[in-house]
Picture (cartoon, rainbow over the protein chains, first blue to last red):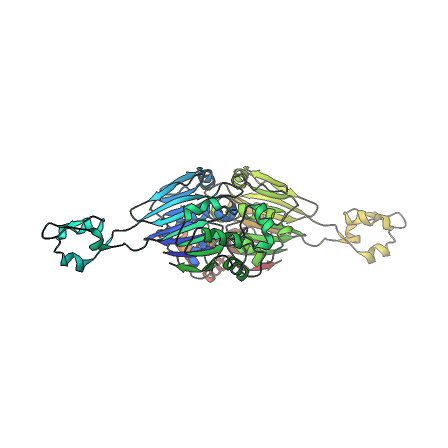
Length: 301
Length: 301
């Protein structure tokens, strides 16, 4: 599982910083999360193959999270895209993108599917045999969802030596991987635990931006491998965080601790600060390990 | 008069090239012409003061000419803009920008005025005591206007020595500057031509992008100081130019010659070409001087 940060700064694109967008590689999928202005240029800089993006998840309709989307949809067309594109985002996203395409008489010639969201409860919005994606309702000034990406638990691992020692017929191997007991050559049922071991631990990624401090998300993100949580401000600006429904680095860390996540990634920094280290220092008082997102940085888990 | 090219490449923003946008400084105005994705970052790179932009002219509603506009309008708000902003562009532009602001619950707190265009005849859309702006209807796949920016003719220059030699009273000076004859000390009317000289030549700039080869514009742009004319293609791709309603460098030069313009600036290049020199070489067979627009380049006249 790999997260590549295309942009992780709040508010406006600037000369050296980009608004929110990131790419999650998980089980052969390449999911694009949010799409601020300039995302397509960031995708080029990070050498992400445009054709591998089939699903785009938009947290909310503030410009710094979605003003790059119409241009990306149009560029896919110019690149001769054929595969369907699925866009998940708040109600209204379809009207916005299609209006802009209509005005430019630039309809896509690939199938474009919108999955509009308006539920305030967690909702399973994508599933295949290896991954599920669920919304994480957040608390921001407009309707906002985070997204929880989870690998599915794979089959149990066959303990080949044990299976052979018990003289178990190979026709039972799939049953054993599925967790069932199996008979040995004398017909005696051998418990599954003696024939297989636990499957590889599954990985999961929770993207939570933008949001006020919102402990309601904790049960849903319990134990995720990595949590990206916004930290627009430091505690010195806690009043601004409250007022604008954003979080401080300390608040992000408290969420990470309460949810016992594996790693906390901070991002969505206000550009008022000179450097990023103070965010890490503030968070590490409450939780470790903390990683600092920055444009162009990638994290593997 | 100064033109700063923020972006001059066709189709999509790329790592090193930007879609169309430019800034025209003329008589203390700072006009923004077109606003492709990434324009606000280009404005920052060129150190253009955002607060000096009060008028934005959008040629047409293809993404590479206007997908940077919603973000710029939103950024103006975040920067605490107070002054009114005027946006001139094809009908539909108001619906597009306001829908995106509405979805993000991000109404501007400065006055935002849209001037929607649908006339296929040249139309005076801006005038003050020093400058006029007129649309130049073009021939593209969607409704498109170029823009003609013209300084107004100033007062005639008083020839101080001649005026004094004729003993003309100072109360007639303004009349002389306005082109009128004036009486000398004996009451004899002295012709204006003996008392004043022609005012400083006025400057003008015609922006013509995107368009097929369209000689109908020639009378309107006759004698302009500088013509920016799109040259998406070279003659080797003339068939593509015809098909997509764009121009070749040769066609741009033929328009420049027929209109006896002062200088031709080429731009809106397809990214299929390796360098820009072939555009200049092709144009210079028919017209000189030719300047090559490029992102970040500025031209003074």
